[in-house]
Every structure is written in structure tokens, then in C-alpha cells.
Image (tube, rainbow, N blue to C red; front, side, top):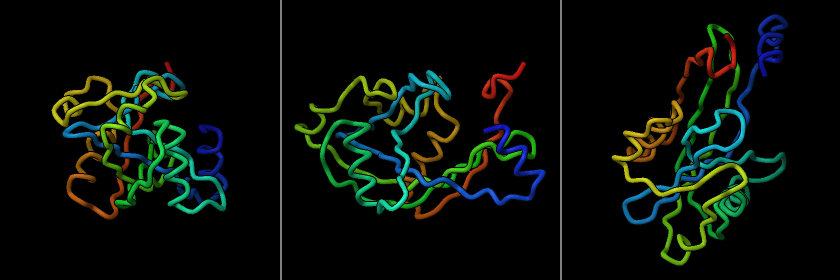
Length: 168
């Protein structure tokens, strides 16, 4: 990513966001979050996401994301779009447009959640636990508030630190 980010700044290439599906799954007063077990950001707690494939509509992509990331069937509802731009200095390292979907889980669906997904460990957290999460992604709370406020579109830039980039 750093080579592409640097070369796009020099060549004048336009960086456009990659589209991903984000699933906010709730059960009672808790939300399902993922503690990453894969790069990047191992150990970071974030919302489950899934890259939208070319030619796939948002609804089908959300259904696939729910099956792939949580292991359950359902039809998540599109809530809006959250654009996350990761910067290091004046270089754009990543630019994603998340199609944020929500699903309220029934007890039957919650029981089927795969706790150890291919991307990491899924767990239920209250809003208070999310707000006090030691290893939260930089956008975790911003996206929670986006969801709670019934927002339709929000854009946020996050400055990456050297440790995020494995620089010394």
C-alpha cells in the first residue's frame, strides 16, 4: 500500500475509495465486534467487514458478508456510508467507503455466530465496553456514533502512527 500511496502522489493518479460492506450486528443491548487475528492491525477490535466484489450489488454483498464473517444467514439493512481515510503525513495509505449495514440478531442467530472466524475472534460488547475498549480501531467509536445517530454519510481521516506502519 505504501508504494501505491507514494507513487500515486507523485504521478497524480486519483485515489478512489474501495467499497466494503460493514456489518453492525446487535443482540439485545450488545454488538458483535471482531478482534483481528490477521494483518493488518492484529489484536485491534473493529466491526466485521467484507470487500465488495466487482459486479455485486450492496444487498447481495451484505448477505455474503454476514455469512462469511459471522456464519449466519440474514438480510442486513443498509444504514448509510462511512468513508475512512488513513493518512500518514500527506500520503493517503488507505481509502475505504463502508456500506454500513445493520441486523438485529434473534437468539437463534446469535447462537450460530462463529466465535472464531477466519479473520479473528467475534464477541458481544456493550456500548460501555466498546467505549472503554483498550485496542479499539480508530474508527470503532466514530462508526458506533454514526450508527446511533442514524447518519447517512460521514467521512473521517485518521493519522496512522509509525507503529501502525511497522516503521522504526
